[in-house]
Image (cartoon, rainbow, N blue to C red; front, side, top):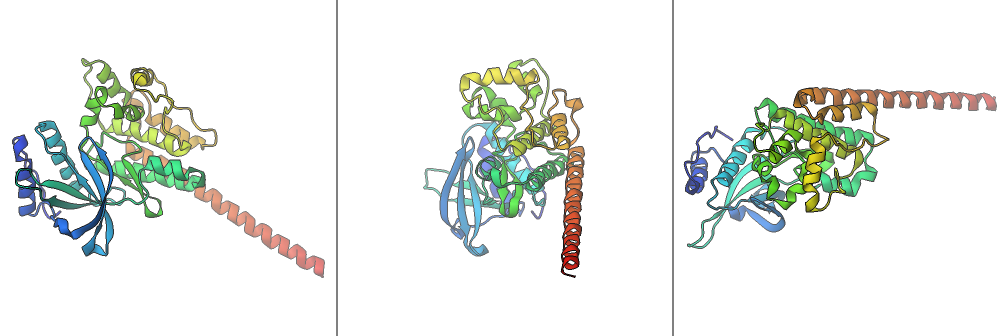
Length: 338
């Protein structure tokens, strides 16, 4: 983005004006809706729907169009504004979904136009689906690279003073050549919606236990913070190592309160036996109940890279041993011929 857009919306009726001002003043890139074709519905959520389309002016590149619902909920309006601002701020990192601007889909005279975010399209889908479909073909190196990329992306947003608040395997995407892309910023409101949204059941395992305690006890004073993201990263690292959805046996809505209570009491998933001990140590530190006992995300990145270096050294050692062994066998064969 050419400039920094820090203006606020005064009321719910001003969201459209806020967007138009951003476009007019070159704070937000605007692209005509006719630039996109082959628009196909992908998914929908609390704030709108997501579509895949081809961008005619960009060699028919696939992009994602994310619509958002206009209504009279001021909190929702703030979430939309917040997400646009955050996307503009973190647009430079390779492991964060790229934001290309906004397009406007015109409606009839009685209906406001639809505004859609233009986002990078991740062709591998969500990390959750990718692991489900490809886990048996993923070696330790690829799993480590996934973990490092997620931690790197979170480290970047933390350095920018941003807390994601909604990290889980449906908000982490996979792009070509196993590139991780972090998505869906500004949706902190989902944490508040634990009691009213059935879909949140699957997200409970990723939520900081201190926030779950707050949900069960309104008197508890605790806000999402960087250590909350670190907790979520820990659960994601376990998921990468297992290929499984955390606590998938808690599949019924009535089990939600039980799971929340058990997690706040310290219940965690069991490490997978084939996982390197150093890797297990990293994610078990991340998901400690006490936020003060969790490392910062920069330490997580450093520790993961340390495992990666050790793995590479072992691989180099193996290759060296194999070369020496092959040369020895060739010499023995030659000696036998003599």
